[in-house]
Image (cartoon, rainbow, N blue to C red; front, side, top):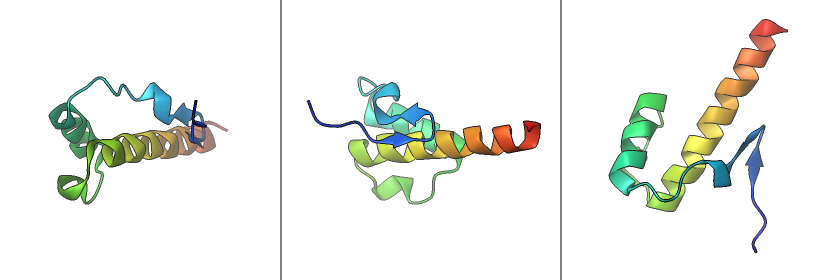
Length: 64
């Protein structure tokens, strides 16, 4: 099994790969991912994981 990239505490594996590209695109839009219209499904998964990790880090900084 290939190693799983981890962004803060959000693993790429935790972004559900069984979702369609359109579903991932919609989530990326909600998260404000730039360049999403040109991304493949795998790129969307990685971008969503990265964006969620960034939000997690920002939330922890505010709390702490």
